[in-house]
Image (cartoon, rainbow, N blue to C red; front, side, top):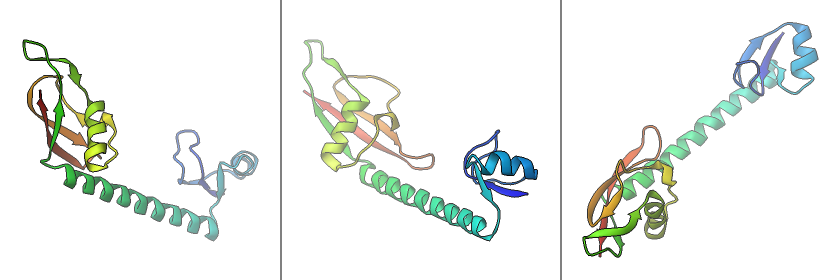
Length: 146
């Protein structure tokens, strides 16, 4: 019997088309709502779900690309107090940068998407990379002044 999985089962991903025994399909997969029959209606539903997923991922990529275009090459300015040796009290973190981006550009950017590679503990200009998606990446500057 051919079934379409609605949820992951035994290492098989949701949406997979499987040919299983009648007993397994009727007594386990269908009864527990883990699969639907692979008839015309089921196949159409599967196709619709795949199209919806493609559309949703394309929209997310488009939004990420728009945010990357806005941030690319921009400078985000921070004013901080420092000690007599020029070192900052504390440091500028990815959370600080994320909040400043939200304030200046109205872009919600998760702090985990910002890649510093170093701690910002002194005055100056620093290059920061934002990896918005696997194929969408941008770079901008963070300027720390007194």
